[in-house]
Length: 264
Ligand SMILES: Nc1ncnc2c1ncn2[C@@H]1O[C@H](COP(=O)(O)OP(=O)(O)OP(=O)(O)O)[C@@H](O)[C@H]1O
Image (cartoon, rainbow, N blue to C red; front, side, top):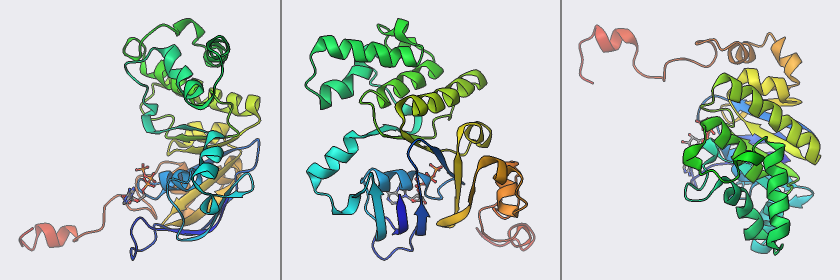
């Protein structure tokens, strides 16, 4: 969870996240949504301990991430499965070896057991039969599923997905969403999804946080947010081009730019 967290990338900068409090209960799928650059990925980096809060606390399974030494952080990270933006696979490794990678890296299990675990994970995403293919031989949707299998290889208790739906065709999109939900429930894990895909995310999330201007702009269960009359939530949920979040990056007015005939 995040407790009253402030964060900025550089000292002296205005915080990009300010007074953020978020809970990610066990067994739940929680979504972090908001416009481009609002700090969604940064929330994942705070939880993973890649960056540290300027103020406030980040705790994972009771451990204060900020107070951990390198070994402690390593142990907590081992409990986390992450799928980064576009979930890149190692292109020179087969599907099998991609999923085996974290097992070989983090455990001393014998190859026979690694084989069984990899095939179980690939089976869970429907790709047991694709084990010998190389990433270049599979579709984008399949690659995403392999990345999912790799993210769950170590049976993590926290699963984090950064834009898991980006760039997928509609069928792969629905399939990936359902898989994320099913894998969470099968593992009894906590899932955190960073996304701006309202339709897919709302279908599988138990709870949603909207971030804007470094703060929680709205939060709640998908149904409640869908019905919300809050202008910000309404704009986001109904994908309106303009509203409290402006379409135009702030700058000179149209009149100033075109009528005054000034320079750039
Ligand atoms: N390593 C970094 N150093 C400095 N600034 C950064 C760094 N990473 C991100 N930022 C800035 O911090 C802000 C939040 O970035 P973040 O990646 O968390 O946003 P996001 O909501 O995930 O965006 P998107 O949906 O576009 O990926 C952005 O303005 C970004 O430019």
